[in-house]
Length: 375
Ligand code: NAP
Ligand code: G4F
Image (tube, rainbow, N blue to C red; front, side, top):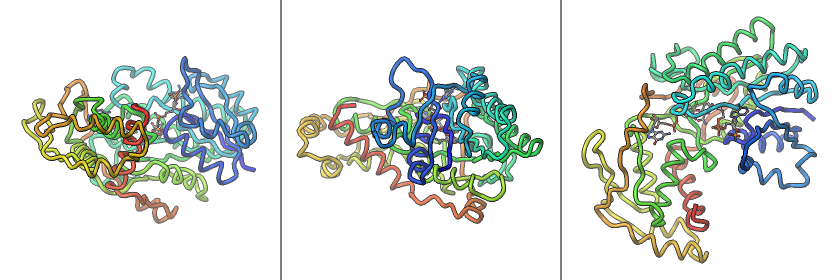
């Protein structure tokens, strides 16, 4: 039975990767950090399973800023594979807490690599959650493993350190360490403050009559959005490749935030039109088709039926999208679109879920949650 350590197990990717590795027969050791409230929501279904908890899934307290803790865990577990997914992963927030972001995202990676040397784990394989944010102000379109980097945020700069320290330790100490340069990947488990989930959640709350408007920042930014579980399978494939190398994982297709908004509301049965420009731009309800809303719901469920009655509060002409400049970033990444051909050729990896299906599955999940539970 192979043993894997996953840092960031309580995050979106950590939770999917855990499911994938457990299915493949791994013993999984997840590192969770102390929190004043429950932070295991995304893995509770595994945690609650008596056949899994403390049999094939083990949780340990830890933190990427605590060196001795990392050393101890490596000594005790002696893993075959390490997936370093833990990070302060929010780009906008990194402008507010740049020092902490660097401590975790840059030096946290170094601490782990050094712990591997210290403990003397010769054959361990290390996956680093690198990111398309490295490309920032893009130097070519689309971006591949060969594209020069130009990060545009403290997050991007910290992850750039993480990228190069992986390359350096691979070359200097022959550690099997790889960067997965992953473009944006989303899911119903995406954190609620990232733009996709913020949109699908708010649109569902607006449809349920629980929220009037959704405030957003830059609607023109373009991202290459894929479906998270497929990217987590890609992480595993990167470590199974015969040689330690870096790989881009992406769909090769980019869409604007505005397109994401339009498609989300469309799924729910609300057609939007845009009025005004820049900070005065608004997304206004043009047409409503309640039959689409109904299709997303189980109206036999009493709570859903109850909230559905309120949903009729939305009217033509309502401004449901407004711009709040507080969500603008001091320096923005305008366009990310990846070229995943290396991963396709060497790993047989390909993103399968199309943009419209990604939006649909996220909307469906949030509509169900909001209409049945109200949050
Ligand atoms: P996420 O949902 O924000 O999860 C981040 C995880 O890191 C959480 O489990 C969090 O714990 C943990 N964490 C944060 N600070 C920590 C610290 N100091 N010590 C230990 N754990 C800490 O992120 P994600 O979307 O799953 O992304 C996973 C990784 O891939 C991140 O490194 C991210 O930067 C990178 N990435 C993500 C994308 C994407 O589109 N999702 C694309 C490229 C790269 P809590 O639950 O306690 O907060
Ligand atoms: O959803 P976002 O916050 O994701 P961003 O900045 O692309 O970062 C995510 O993907 C990276 C991979 O490229 C990861 F490394 C990183 O950890 C994270 O997972 O923002 C996407 C775009 C940006 O251009 C932002 O300015 O959406 C724009 N946006 C517009 N309004 C907004 C909002 N973003 C957020 N979070 N909230 C808004 O209200």
